[in-house]
Image (cartoon, rainbow, N blue to C red; front, side):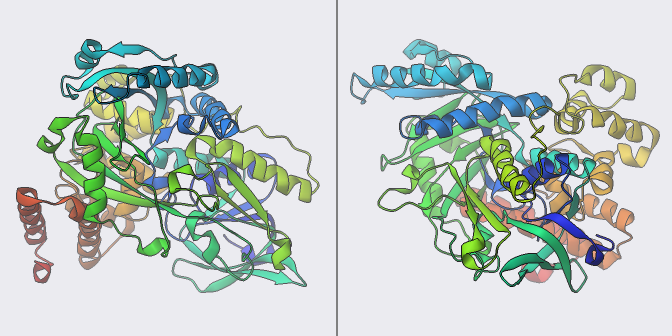
Length: 548
């Protein structure tokens, strides 16, 4: 952000989730000078705590058909611009023996209506399955399931989607400043003049901008609250559980005990995700926690359909806050998943805008709509091209077998590199081929090479172990960082010239963060095993003994 004080940007964006980087990409591609500030790291908030599904939202079909259409349409666009980042998720809506006899017909009628969107999202039409066919898919499913109807959806790595969208924005001229906390939206005579922002390790400075867009998600009301006082949202809390392996190959939609919600159990990369809850949240987003009641609620819902659930290890839980559009007199799960744009001129801040709500699957359309508003204000005529141009490196060509043979790197490692980085994987593999240090595997669970970590530091704003985790999944596997934290901290220490104390602190902080996500799911013998693993890690570093 050199010389930021002397430059006036067309757009200053607050927030580095999918909406923030999506708008930054669209604005910069239309020729607007754009700068984005994120107080923590890209995708460190609500986007990083989502289910990772690019889906149309079939449950909104009855009441919000337009929201479903938009999400399906954008799902198709995301598949075109980031094909290597998406994977198909077949979903079953099961019918239990205890359900009314007409329930199967109701489900199939619903899925038939949803089929009308299949073409635009690249999905397959529904299939009706009998009991034997359901059991053939997975013998672990409950014997009380008498049949099911399938849907077809897509999954993604939300962290990679955000990072690649941000890189595309930078390639078009945008500036991404991470970490940097906006303290105030500066106005003069009721008109926006810019923002006061504190970059990491620097004092507060004034950055001039013609417009400011508040895309901080559930943090949006806390961004200069006097100037955003008209903003109304009804934040809801979503908890997910993560199992240490794929225990299903298709997803199930499970009815929760209260009948209000549907809980998914879905395969995601080499893990299984269960979620999510949907409860009003009245606290600050920085202080959200997970209760064992929420863990039990999710497990109870899935156990009815997958009785052997308790035989598997739930290795952690994670939580996020949805910046849901405000609604009164309805349950949380009935709230609209559409989005709203606020013009804060009425709050005495002409030129300040906020956007809340929406879904991951519709982020590109939301960004297009927000950018249209800015272009109209600035009298710019450029049209949107974000659905036409691929994200950096994204491609349908993934020659992982050939590259594994050429470089001698493990084939699964190469395949994961192509999934995360597309054609950029060639650069990472070439660096690993030439340098033995970069060839070493830092994370065995997720096959993360030192070369990939070095690339993320050099090209993707990674500054610490948590940043590396978001970009590579390092530490997200069964060991939950116990085997990879120390050696990765040492490697980063060499890149950043850290002291020995800095390396130890980085390793301990990373493990402690993972531990906080493990605690809500620790029961019985698993709790003892986790304490033992943590003790081994602490003693292996020679520090932190007082924490035992």
